[in-house]
Image 1 (cartoon, rainbow, N blue to C red):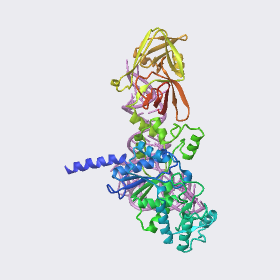
Image 2: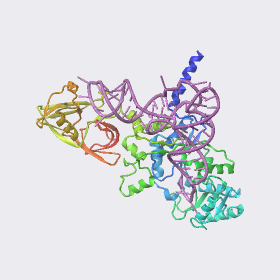
Image 3: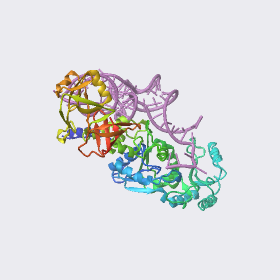
Image 4: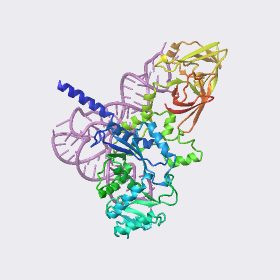
Amino acid sequence: MLDEIDVTLSKREVKERVHGLPDLPGAIQGKVVMRFAPGPSGPLHLGHTRVAIINDEYCRRYDGTFINRIEDTNPDRIDPDAYEMIEEDLKWLGVRVDKTVIQSERFEIYYDLARELINMGKAYVCTCPMEEWRKLKEEMKPCPHRELPPSVHLDLFEKMLARQFEEEKAVVVIKTDLDHPNPAIRDFVALRIVTSMPHPRTGDKYCVYPMMNFSVAVDDHLLGLTHVIRGKDHLNNTHRQEYIFRYFGWKEPWYHHYGLVSIPETILKTSTVGKGIKEGEYSGWDDVRLGTVRAMAKRGILPEAIRAYWIDCGIKDVDVEFTWDSLFAYNRDLVEKAADRLFFVWDPVPIDIYGVERLESYAPLHPEFPERGVRRQVMEGEPIRVYVVKDDLELLKERGKIRLKDLCNLEMKDGRVTYIGNDLSILKEKVRIIHWVPQNSIPGEVLMPDGSIRTGLVEPIHKNEDGKLVQFERFGFARIGQSSPKMIAYYAHP
RNA sequence: GCUCCCGUAGUGUAGCGGCCAAUCAUGAAGCCCUCUCGAGGCUUCGACUCGGGUUCAAAUCCCGACGGGAGCACCA
């Protein structure tokens, strides 16, 4: 009896593990605090979704707290709209945000802790020219200011705050180990001066700005982070931040750095995209050519598909290559049963059908669920004109016979197309099936992710499909943006 | 140049000393299907980077080589 229970339990555990993330070391139900920390330079893109979703998954698993921390400490790279866009994107992704923290509202906190560090002799104000300081560091040598007493630095720091220094003329530096073998770890800048541009939120109220490694360490502690999961590109940052934790005697969160993702052939870089939008190259942040969350939403990629993808990908240290095919497979799985079928004829050419006066079609909205209804088209008169894809007409010319799906069979002789019944047994002769649209179809275009546009005709739609993902038979899944007067759709995937 | 991280099929993933002549997904190829270049069914292809060592036994542990990636910013 006991044995039996054990077996079922272990089998289930194994099954769950295969498709799930590993457990977090030291995670206690209800006590986990994690974060997502984007810079507000634009809306979220595919690269952001991994860290957001992984952290959200763990917060859900452990009933933890998810903090969305906006790292807006570089006024040069802030899009004021981004604050709101990030929030919207997270909502769309299904990420449950418990708390939002904006770093530009916390300058005083950073200043106070900077004073403390200086006081402890763990930080100093350096007024060396940038290059000299950097060069000395490379040679593992201290700059002339490094060993001056804290009181001097405290004084200089207050002068920084009082705008007595120009931009680039003074910085607060955290002492680490100048002889550290890793050059990336030696003394690093904690706060700098920015006066050349106002901050979109705080204007020119503050001129001393914390650097990422300083504000991150401070906030990770103050906000009570228990676990930090992020990309491997932050590995050295973590080492730097650890110095700050040690100096203050703070308990470090559990860190994990997963491998980098390379996303092929996708335009992600926020600054490039922002510029492209301004110049009219892209229609906006949701341009279907982009890798933004908004673009994916527009195309009909479901957030659940993105989530499934990243969970499957896991959090290993190995660098991974993103593949659209896999994401599409997840999406297709989620969407296949819901998507109505429609005929979209690209590169349309007319065919006049002789030998029949009336044709009526009953194509199902979904082949597996006939109860959902049919797309009924009635055509009368002789000849009856329909439109087919240009290549399909060539196929008819070549083979002599063809079947119009859910309508009838055709034969072509001497350039004239004749109705030859509606018997499905014709398929045994290996006759090919093509799709078609009636004469009263709607002009339409499908925007492809590569920037091209497929223009053609879409069958008259008797149902409101706007905003929904449909499947254009023999073409692929696409999301309908509008269906009149002209149909505009956005291609998702095959 | 220095430092760190990593190496299982095309891609992602499971396995982490014997159950592995290596899992699953995706992809590719082919076939089936009275109606899609979708779904479904069936079949096939395809990987433990290499070399030493430890061990009765290694994809799994150790060392080295090779390969890939990241950082060395008054960006995040």
